[in-house]
Length: 162
Image (tube, rainbow, N blue to C red; front, side, top):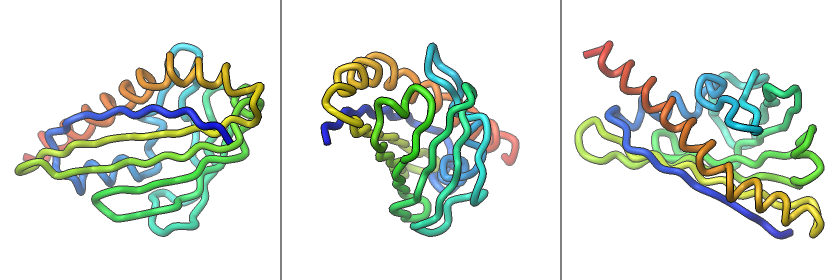
C-alpha cells in the first residue's frame, strides 16, 4: 500500500505526565477540531483513556463520519501509537488505514516536546494522488492547530495548579 504522512511538533510548558494524560485521554474533541474542509472529533466511544494495547475506540467526526482506532503501542508518559481503520465518509473512499503516534520528550524541568506523526495508507492507486494532495496541503496545519489547543490547555492547567 502506498502511504502519505505528516507530522507536527510543539514545545509545551508542562510536565510530560500531564501532557500525556491530555493527549492519550478521551478529551481529543477539545483539541482536534474542524480545520478547513477537514472534520474535527465530535465524540469518542470506548476507553476514557488509553491503557493497554489492543483497546479500541470509535471516533465520530463533526461531519458525521467515523473511524475506529486501536491502540498498538503504549509507553506511559512517553508515547502511544494507534491504527485507524473503518473510515466512513469521504476519507473512507481514500484511506485503507492510518497509523498515528504521539511521542513526548521531557526537556528540562516541567517542559515537554510533543510530536504527532500520522501516515495514511491509500485504499488503492487511484486514491493516492487525491489523498496525497489533501494530506500534504492540509494535514500539517490541522495537526499543528490541534497541538496548539492541547498546549494551551496543558499550560492553563499547570498555571492553575501553581
